[in-house]
Image (cartoon, rainbow, N blue to C red; front, side, top):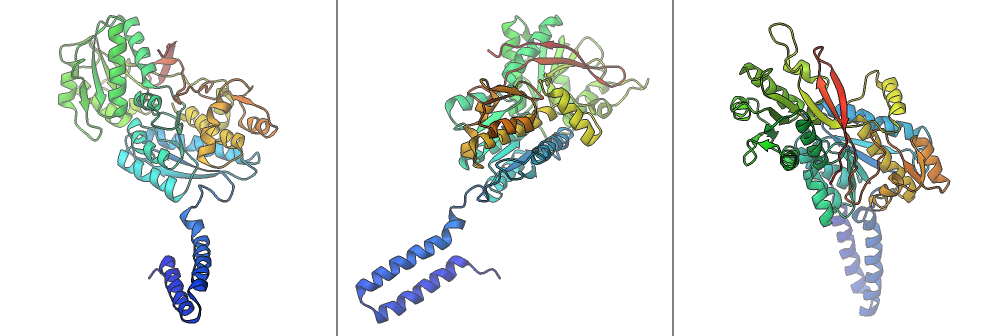
Length: 446
């Protein structure tokens, strides 16, 4: 049985009050009870008004998809965040103390992500959270973060809705991301389709913030370039939890458009392409265009090979944010040395997101989220000494110097809405089942 400390203190106060009433005048009772009330308030204050981290060290969390549809990305992203924290702790940590990292699995599910953010913010009392990966999960978590004055910085949530809400002031400056929004990728996809001379495109997208936002962004951009989206008024939207897609595939490929844009994630996206192959729709007139959500080395294996032993996915094309920032080479060396593998598509973005949180904490001289959020853009943007190494950056801040952090994924310049800008790689899957970058498309972000 658990004893309630508040109940016990109340009992003591009542008994003490009765004793005083029996022995003293009314004036002395009032004075004594006032003193007693103050004493009890002081006892209760640490638990009722606990700060985010009273120990003085910086405590941050990760909210990433270790399981679920984005698990192919989440574990590697978690490794990037952990490696950054380990690197920072090897050079005296932040504010003179080791950084604490608490990790939660969002399961690629909004409800699970919201519950995990609540735990990180209200139980663990973190100052900042790296995540989520999927836009739908970030949407479910961000209001919880803002309410608790926790900085949320996503390495890969790209829905345009965050830019729109930030402009309205919904996030009060607590939202950032190190991957550019899909308004930029929609433009890149439209330019790719135009360059390939595709006149008609059908859109098929996962039915969440990411899928709907990117689909609409592409439709607007492609039509502005003179293209036709054959199902513009009713894009094919498929449930994130679905496991069969025969009817959706038939609807998207029906009428043989020049291309089908598939906005999806590896698990469900692979099932969709496998279903399209089984219906005899791949490798013919209609080209498949993918987004960064499908740029994963495991996708060709997930889709499989045909009877001739050839990869079914060979020949698809796609776009993904260009993650070749000034610090990329050093990050690649450090990552491969630690994990003996190549990093994934959003690992550099995760490294940068974690770095910006901790550099801002050092610059703020505070472990609180409210202080950290005011320093994110200061350490990310000019003016200041350009620096790529996180330990060197921390050292410069301790010396009282301004810095302009140059990241592994980009130069990490962040605008007033918390967005980074960037260019996009055009990629394909070749006959060996490997992902290859063909060229780069610059975007205006307008």
